[in-house]
Image 1 (tube, rainbow, N blue to C red):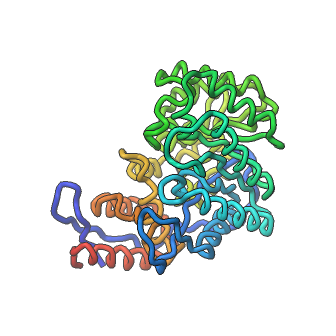
Image 2: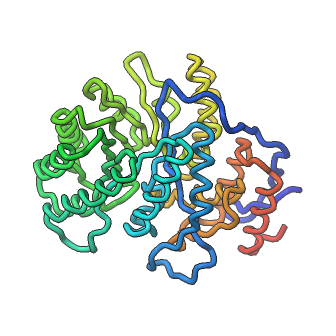
Image 3: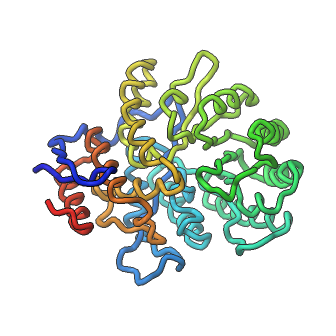
Length: 386
């Protein structure tokens, strides 16, 4: 059938869905040339009688099943991160339960997992640096108890409390000294969370970079790597070239990931990406091609996915999760298009239709007929008859 999809400028246009998926089977050899994490979304419980500002109601079975899907393709799972709506519908109580359940599931299936450590249990308002540090410590202890690797996320509370770069050096230095195992440091730019503007003590990214590097150079044995989400390929390349030996750069650049992962004669980035939630199987396949030394083949597989990623992550970037969950529903990983916090309403119908069209063109849906029928049902709800 031909779908009538809404156009960004108004009206509708015809689109004929593909009939066959590309299809990447689970299994295969481990990924060896790059360490690759997919930041994973959470599946809401559609039957919960809740409201946007109430605690998240999570469908735990479907949420954990999606993580098993990612592990089955050889990817690591970055848990309780921005993609899981951390701070945008998922509060600390929900995140803590997610970390416990996913940590246990990772042990059961032998999957790699790293979990976000933040300060979101603090109530809105101003907090002292000591309170921020204590909040970080509480979450770090929980993640370490589950046996998961820790990702020290950027903190809204720290951004509000810190007045100088030295405040960041003090808080992070304290946390790194007490961390049991090397952690990943996460620099999330303000395009993902406006409350993080000026992180590391300056709105000047060059000055902020110097503070960030100072934290790392003071504790290189406690830093497994850095996760950079600034959507600036040049800045990431310059930063990774200055990292101490043994400290990895995990790209979080959902605009430029193929070139950053492929790298150059001076190095490359590993990956910790939200876009690898919908691209998991194809991304794993591309990295296995890269493992053989075939950079050209890797780029030929991954470069065509960038248009979809840039569409999902277009401004306001923080609402990219809506497109990610839409694609999970269309791909059959969950039975509904409902999100915690009601965030399914955060993108327009033309935006969602374009996401479907691009994903279908890439062959991302295991059953294109199911995706087509589900997209038709969504269009019907919005009054676009087929």
